[in-house]
Amino acid sequence: MTEVVRTTYRVIRSNPTGRFALRAAVAFVGFAFVVVGIGLIPLPGPGWAIVLLGLSIWAIEFVWARHLLRFTHRQLSRWWKWVATRSWPARILLGMAGLVFVAVVVWTSVRLSFGIDILARIMNYLATH
Image 1 (cartoon, rainbow, N blue to C red):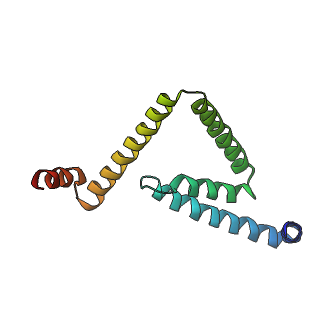
Image 2 (image 1 turned 90 degrees about the vertical axis):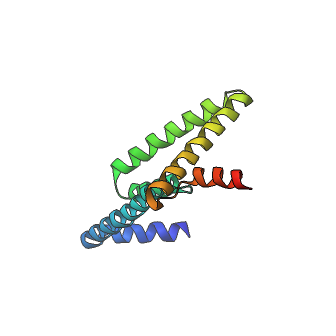
Image 3 (image 1 turned 60 degrees about the vertical axis):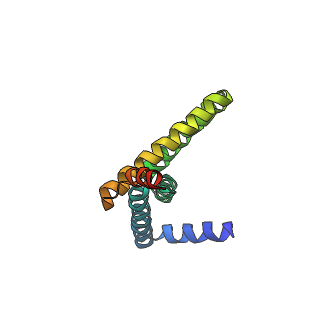
């Protein structure tokens, strides 16, 4: 299967019109993924993963995207290696800090988007039940 994809890719790129169409399609699809991913970053879910997928799509045709993807990979690898060298209590604190950050982002998003104060509703519920 991989050889079929590579051959098709080479055939498309051998023609100037095909090369332009491929670059335009890759640029458009990658842009769509990056925009959707950026829109999902403040929400719980795969926002960053979708941004990286869009960057990977761009890396098919654009050298700058390949360099940015390699840089991102190196930085994430450094982060994970650094976390792996920490003690379990430090890892737990890092995880809790991440959860608090996500909770604040969700609370802020819901409050600004829908005007609902989740924390106030939870406190009200606990006070009345």
